[in-house]
Amino acid sequence: MNSRNLNVASCWSGIRTLIVCALIGVSTQSLATETVGYDQAKLAEIKVLLDGLYEKGQIPNYAVEIRKDGEAIFSAYRGNTKLGGAVAVAPDTIFWVASMGKPIVSSAVLKLIEDGVLGLEDPLSKYFPQFDSMVVAPMGDLDVPFEIAKKPITIRNLLTHTSGFTYSPEVLGLGDVAYQYAELGVMSQQVSLEENLELLAQIPLVAQPGDSFNYSVSVDVLGAIIEKVTGQRLGVYLDEVFFKPLGMNDTAFSVRPEARKRFARFYQPESLRNPAPSIPGSEIEWHIVETAPFGRPYDGWGQVPTFDSGGGGIYSTAQDFLKYAEMVANGGELNGVRYLSAETAAIHFQDLMPELGLEAFAVAFGEAAQYMKFGGGFGIKLQEDGSEKADYYFWGGAANTFFWIDGQDGNVGVFFTHIWPPRYNLSDQIEQLVDEARIIK
Image (tube, rainbow, N blue to C red; front, side, top):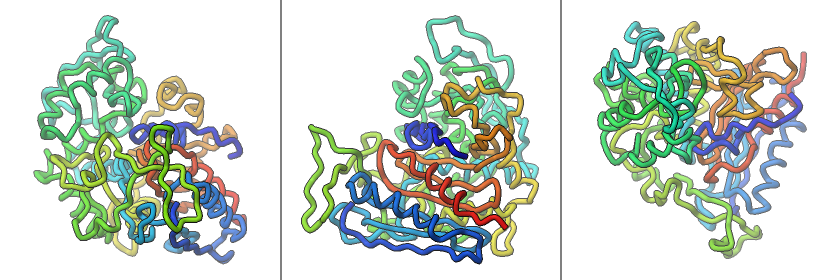
C-alpha cells in the first residue's frame, strides 16, 4: 500500500481523525533480528516517527508492541503517565482502549455462536422483544416520512454495524436521530443497561437493517445479549472466557485502586484559552494540556460503571491486548490453549456483508470506503492495488489507541497514547512501516 489516506478514526468515539482515523520520561526499544523476518533499520523508523511528535510536545507518551508467532518484533515506550510525573509508560501502563473493546465483545458473541447459544441470524427481538417493530428515519432525518423496518435487526447486523442504530453527534452520529441519542443520553451511565435499551427501542433507526454501515451502539446491544443469555455481567463473562485464561490481568471495565498509578492521563492540543503548562526540568516545549473526555475528569475514569459498556468501556495495557490479538491471529489458540475454534476465529476476518457496495460505507469512511470491508467485529482494510486482498484487520479507540492483525503474515501490533479527540493517523503509518520491514524469503 502506498497512499495513506484512511480516514476512519470516528470508528471509535470521535475517531474520524485517527485512521480515517512529553515530558521527561524513559524511552525503551527492542528490535527484532532478521531471523524473524524483519529489517531492523526499517523498524527503527517507527521510533523516529513517534519521537518526532513526542519531542515537538504533541503527544504525552507512547507505547508500541509488535509480535509475530509469539516472538517480539518491536517494542518502544516513551514518556510518563502524566506530564511532569515520575511513572514511566511501560508494558503494564493502563489506557482506556474505548472502542478497541468492540472486537473483544464480538469475539465473545462468536464464542456463544460456536457453543450453540446464539445464532448469527437470530433477531435482536428474540432476546429483547421491544425491538420487534422498528421504524426508520432515512439518514437520521426526522423531517422525512418514516419507513417501517423491512427486516429484523440480527446479530449479524449488530456485529457489522449494519443494524440501523447510530451514535450521538460527537461519535459520528447520523442526522437528527443522533441528537435524539444525545438528548436522551442513550447508552449513558446515568441509567441501567435495561433502561438504555428501552430508550433505544423508541428511537427511529437511521437506515434499514442490513443496508449500510453506520458506526453505532450495536456492540453495547451485543453486550446486553451476552448478559441475557449467560446470566452474568458482561465483565464477569469476559473474565471467564478470555481475560483470566489469557492472563490479561489489567484488562477490565474499571481500574483497580492499587493500579491507578499506572493509568495514563488524557491530553488534548493546547489553545489560546488553554495554553500548555511549563513543566519544570523538561527540555520539551509542550503543546498539550490535560483534558476530560466526554466532560469526565480523570478521577472519574476507571471507576466501576453502572453497566459494562461493550462498545467503549474497557481498559487495558499493551501487553494484555496483544495476548487477545495474538490469540485471534493464531486461529483462536495461544500457548497451546484453545479459546475459539479455528473456524470461529476465521469469522473475524470474513466479510460478513459481502452484498454491500462502496456506497454502504461512504457515510462513515468517505473516500477511504473503497478500501473498507467489515468482518466479525473487525474492520478490514484492503490493499490499495485493486486485488481485494486484506492489508490488515483492525480497530481503534477514541483516545488514540489502535491495534491491527496483518493480513499477509499475521503479525499483530498495538499503538497507545492518550490524545482526545484522536488527532494523529500514526497507526496506519506504523503498520505500513512494518509491511516495508518484512523480509521476503
